Image 1 (spheres, rainbow, N blue to C red):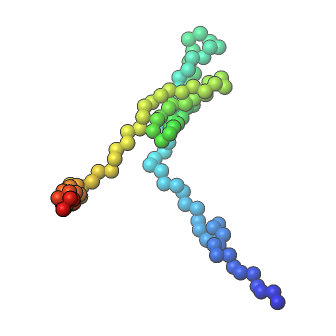
Image 2: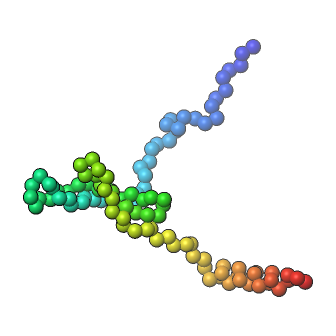
Image 3: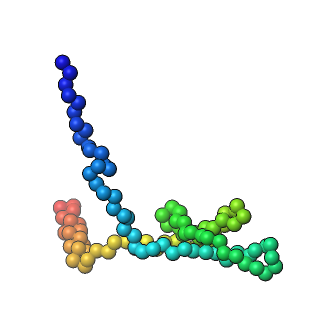
Length: 105
């Protein structure tokens, strides 16, 4: 005896949901770097560049010129730890001192 095929537990994603555009903070500006044009004396040209983040901390400005990769270090990204409210800090200090008072008893 053959049983009917079971329905898939997860329906196809394309059938039920619409694709929403990603939320971005704003338009990404075009960045250009001025480089010397060796074909003419004293002439310059502009090459497109982008910012690259490495190891989630260091920023570089990267562009390609004549098939070679050039980069300029822009600095590290400042990471700010999440701050606690003064009420939470006071409570953790009070709990810690009470625990220390009971040790060795």
